[in-house]
Length: 357
Image (cartoon, rainbow, N blue to C red; front, top):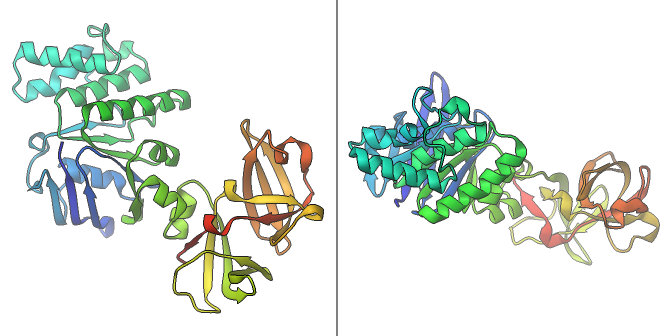
């Protein structure tokens, strides 16, 4: 295991900063995800850590040692690529043993370690098969086995599950996380799939336009996003513009003429413009005729049944669009409300995040 440190690292292509002033400390043994849309810089940073690219500025350390000028094969890393990168003319066993061969490992030892790695990924018995004889999921398992056979200090995975169908992808997420815990290896995982990052990671860094927009635990990022981009990218969020004010009920935000209570210890002044982020599953609503307490009046525009839950698209009286989710078996999803129903929308103040404008 090794700690990975990235200090003020930048990489520029022509006039574009692919990575700009990135700072990360990834503790040894942790599972750390780099999350963001395509072109946001996450894969570039992974390749900088791997040694396939050299930073234009900044310092990268693995296990406390600066590795800016150290070639990939001397960084004690294992890499899993998005497209597997298996040799078609080599058997499964030979593919897995290849990295060990390049490191000068003796024949008997490298094949023994390759067989052990194949057992870890449930591919024992397919040692003599060729990649073309395997399914996509099996090929990915072989690629994973090859990367762990070298027993790296740092495990790097570049969107390794993106080519798999959804059901297999979910199964492999669980297996990868279990394998990582078994090995105890420091892991850096690149993905654009928010659900994947949330379910697998000890911590996440969210990228936007080459910069780290926010980093922290999955819970911290989801519950307290720093800005609208993070709130909307990690899951989904309803973003509401309002004015910070005060009423007999305490500190509030005035939205569409309604004073909504807010929980905040930030130094806002009366009259400041602020933005709230509310997750769809946190919205509470009832028919307007039976509503009690504060809330935004709205109309149900559509209801979509999604199996375990239902999705509600709502429109406030001033035209603001809101999205809510509720269990399909609850009174909300079982016919209690229909399209066109007039409702009152509310939420718990402590379940609301105030995000940067």
